[in-house]
Length: 153
Image (cartoon, rainbow, N blue to C red; front, side, top):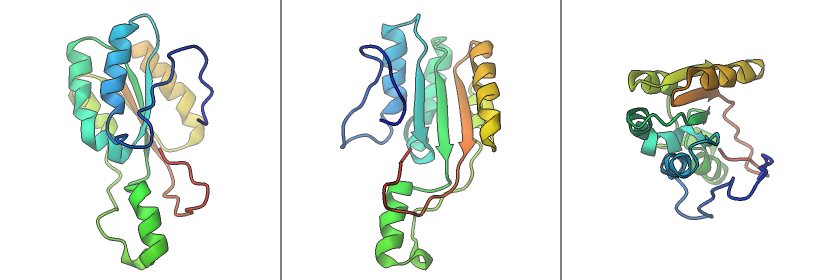
């Protein structure tokens, strides 16, 4: 973990398998089990694509979960080995668009923020908390092609 987590039961991790897309269902369960605690989900744009529509569930049930998407416009876990093995000019099926997932969450009745610079993140998170709604911060991050010691969102 690269984010310090304090307190028992404050980190949900499905392990090395079955991880893609489980974050939002985990976040909903965590908020229902602990309604007075802040729940934040940090995930990548590919993972958001699997269960991002569950923000509709969070809106319907009034669950002010905050999501932070690291948007590198790629299936990073597949792009890096593919580029390393076959060449960066031969990528296939791993590049995405810089989709405005924040707008998707707004369309579902939640609060959305779009961040393009690191200095914008804290204020965006503050606005999410102040909104009292299920919220998403769509953070544009670089497309890191370095396979060694990478941190995958």
